[in-house]
Image (cartoon, rainbow, N blue to C red; front, side, top):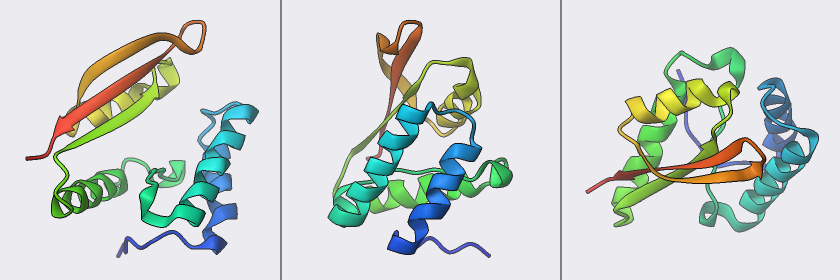
Length: 127
């Protein structure tokens, strides 16, 4: 049984382990991810990012997390979600996940992260 709950300070080291285990991030990107975790710990629900442990991927946890976020946004009278990700081949599974979840590419920013690594912005209307 999986329970979705707010982030706790003691989750920080496990999140770092998950980010590293994904094998998708450079050392600089790992540092940025941890800055985002620290922001979430400081700002609470004003910040929102999702990651799923690679060992748990493909088991529906990401879909459950995204459903939870979408319902929460609607409950707060939000109408749209934007998701940003890399165009690198290592992100193909994530890109397919977003597309299967009803997200469409709203923007592509060429060479955003580095040459040959575009930022993809997915969007979904929730209303």
